[in-house]
Length: 290
Image 1 (cartoon, rainbow, N blue to C red):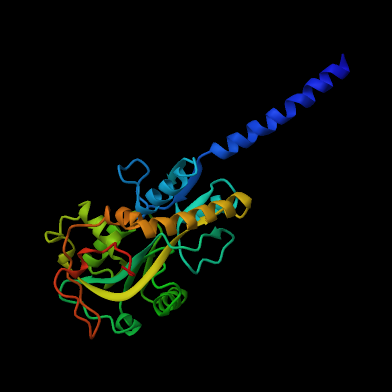
Image 2: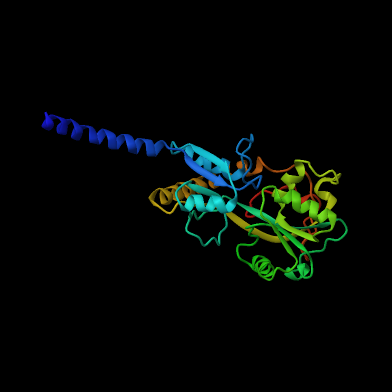
């Protein structure tokens, strides 16, 4: 009878609704990012990256698994904004797009200048880069919108002796450009450069990173996660920030970061007036506040 079918249908609706809610609750958090190891590495690597490990551990405490895919950064941002992915890893503090950013940094990168051996000089300000051919990775931020970011942006707008590479493994290509004389200096994160050099592929580097002169800049940039701008994204950002505070207090955040630390000793050209001492830069991935 029609009435009976209606009653059965109505009785089934709550079950259907709860089933959908359960499916949403257990659906993997879809993470995307470009390749920038040790922060975001290949999805099939034994260590998938500092940011991946941190997010995975925090959300596992809420019964949420993750999926992770490496794609170009612009595509990663658009995918999250459109809801085709849930979170983009490695957002900078001064991001101004549509994604919702969490507020507690997962870690900080550490900006250095990399020169050919014998040509390095201390960082006294952006003036040390004047007239130099600079190499950078696309979409890199170096001091959260400070003097170095503003200087690089100005050089890019003027197309003034600067090469920005739009590719994965951009560091390997930049190092080759530096060694061949096509550029004079690279602006990059020390941990990411250490990782790339440790992977080999550059026969000229008999002495690892010490084959170059590397200048400390004192510049760092926090790394955040951008979520889809909806209710799920707001809840995910809250989960992440709460988890980060707990991990920081417990020491677990340091443990994850330091598990990617390179054992190579790298002596940097110090900032004027500072004396870091030999081997100071081996702890390249420890957060600046420690």
